[in-house]
Amino acid sequence: MKRIVLLLAALTVTSWTSLSAAGLSDAEFRKLHAELQPDNSALWRTVPWKISVLDGQQKAAEEKKPLFIWAMDGHPLGCT
Image (cartoon, rainbow, N blue to C red):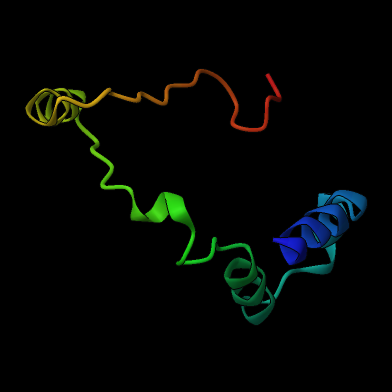
């Protein structure tokens, strides 16, 4: 997690135009992409997520559990 925060801070300081002007090699992109992936042992990855709301409602009703819906509108970084 600390590595991701540091990497995001570095990317914030470095302008995207300089990255595109200098060119990001395929190897650099793959390395950056791999570093930004969440840890496979993260707790949210163990949740049996449902993509369909109807499937989730049915499962929640069968197990008598609450239904958690994550919904958003707009840009994921809040840049609207």
